[in-house]
Structure formats: C-alpha cells, structure tokens
Length: 149
Image 1 (cartoon, rainbow, N blue to C red):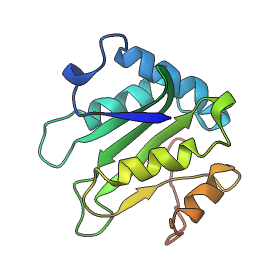
Image 2: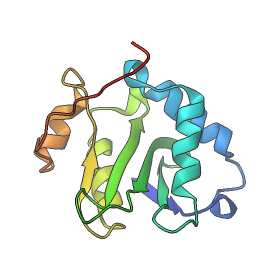
Image 3: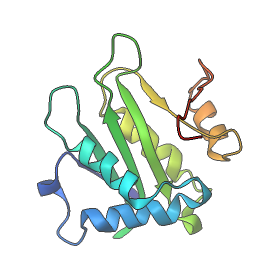
C-alpha cells in the first residue's frame, strides 16, 4: 500500500531523509528527463519558500517503509494568467513503475492544491500518456529563446 507525506518546509522532513537524499532520488529516477542537482534543489527551495507568491510542497510516496516516489509542486504566483501551480518534478523508482504509483502520487498532490496545475513534458516522455489520461491537456506550444545560442 502506498502512503504519502506532504512536506511544506525543511522541519517537516522525516528524520531519516535529507534534502540531499530527495534531490538524489529525483536525479536518479528522472532518468533521461532529469535536470542537474542544483536545479532540482532550487525547485525544492522554492517550494519551501515563505516569500509572497512563492511556495508549494514536496510529496513523498512510500511503499511500506521504502521511498518509492517524489513530487515537487511549486506555486506560480501568477494565477491571473497561468495556472496557480506547476508540477515541477515527479519520479517513481524504476522497479516500481507500471503499478499505478505515478497516477496515485499525482492524484494525491491534486488534493493539496487550490486551482489549476501545469506541467512541462517532453513529447517523447512515456509519462505524457499518464498525464493525458489524468486530464492534462496541451493548451500552448512552449517556445524558448536562448541568448547564448
């Protein structure tokens, strides 16, 4: 059975887990869709921020006593024109995939937000189909400009 722990700040972390452990979990289990550890850490810091317009949470999923999944949700602070929340990271241990855990983690996270949720997913990410089954839709094509190119 999957159980969840919603973390709103560093002081709520289980005693056996550090921020570094969570960053490492995400870095490992995001596979080819991972960001670097610094970026992952920044998203977690943002989730724990008390600055107006920032915040969010980290959702830990356990199968028994084993950390099986992690989700990072950030508030956007821009609900007037984009969704209030952005699902920044979700990862499930490779050996636990295909059991409905990703779906359960997202459904649990949705219980803890007010307003809409956005996420970015690459077209070739197999998780894209899960997001579509959960009701996520494509509203815009994201375009980026990089001055360093």
